[in-house]
Image (cartoon, rainbow, N blue to C red; front, side, top):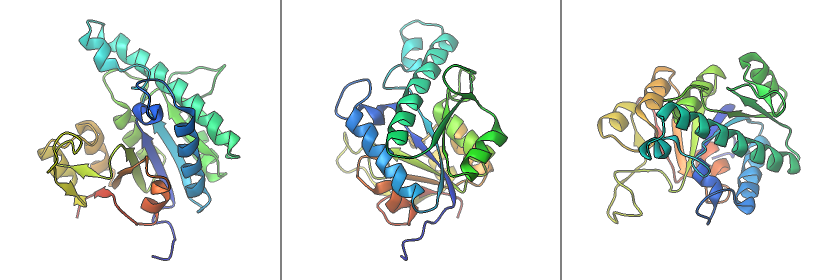
Amino acid sequence: MDGQPLYKRVLLKLSGEALMGPGEYGLDSNTVKQIAADIGSVVAMGVEVCVVIGGGNIFRGMKGAAAGMDRAQADYMGMLATVMNALAMQSALEIAGLPTRVQSAIPMASLCEPYIRRRAQRHMEKGRIVIFAAGTGNPFFTTDTAAALRAAEMSCDAILKGTQVDGVYSADPKKIADAKRFDTLTYLEVLSQDLAVMDAAAISLARESKLPIVVFNLHRQGAFASAMRGEGPYTIIRDV
């Protein structure tokens, strides 16, 4: 490898849980700083980066619905949680010297910009990081689906999904010791084997848009930059 990035423009998908660090909920400032530093190292390679963050560290819509709350109402609460995470990540990135804009699918003029596709593209062309908050702005859609949607709208070359493990496994490797790890998968294999990478709507949208999905361990420092150079370990999902 010559150290050159494989992709020019990417979307980084982070779960809300990724921001918890060793905690059980909320935000861990050291973890947020480390992620910001890793994003900075990829921007330094000349890559245009946008980000979608989940809200599960603060509130998860499905959990609220399971507790008897109206599902749409619960999902809107989850979207507000993603805005809180986006603002925290913006702060960490700007402290690290990286100009960042937050755009929300639910307009919140006092906090951030509304989502405007062409404005977001212009920010990226100018070297700014754009964080897309509030999912798609609609209940019943996950932030995974929002990530696939925004990546397609931004004409990204790939989706980089940072997770708790170094790729896609046949089962949860933390619970099943002999779970098989995959280096490559097709979209249809992910769907037919019901592998828990992203939900079916997100995988189908990525497939339709011909967007490869690179799944890597977010907690291994420098893993984002390594994956961008094609250095493992990671799993790549694409049509062969």
